[in-house]
Length: 80
Image (cartoon, rainbow, N blue to C red; front, side):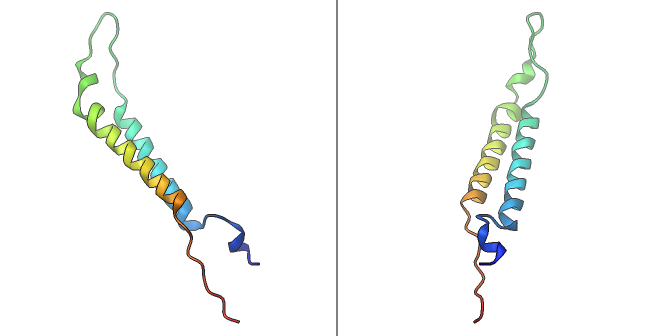
């Protein structure tokens, strides 16, 4: 049995996982920002970027990671 058949993932799976993780990190960075305190209210917590765009980016990242895990590596036919 060759070494490639021993692994469940191939190189493309790992690349897709890394891209998905990077998208999730970008989504969490979009959610970051100043917070409200007891003395001062920060209206930026209700911005479109933090409420709608960032969660959608994170969801896309998680879905792409799920695809990367479920993707089957292509098998190469060996000649006899």
